[in-house]
Length: 135
Picture 1 (cartoon, rainbow, N blue to C red):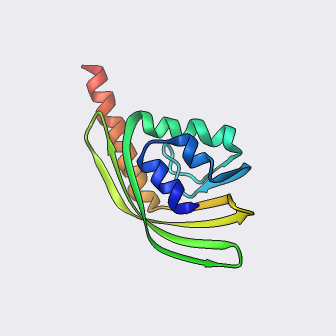
Picture 2 (spheres, rainbow, N blue to C red):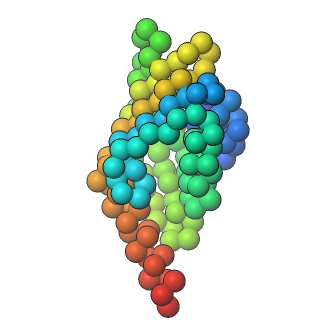
């Protein structure tokens, strides 16, 4: 399921990705895109626009490097690549996912990124876009 979800993400197929989740899923991330603070999304209805907002501005790839599963919980290390389309800036690195399953679907997913690196990337992108818009 997790591998299918990452494959769907690489194919930019949000609906196939969401097919791997239960309806009332929870997505938690330690590093928000705008302010760098942790945030939570609950349900596919909240998760869907978040995913689409990323795909509108960036090309992204992710691959599972390590995967462990025990007692219904998976721990994975993910290699990721994000390229912002307008600026060409790239963010690449590793992050961790902790995934809890309900039946044959993902119920809760937690992502642990290098928050400082992610925040710096999105601040750089925002400052360059602001500079271009002010010209």
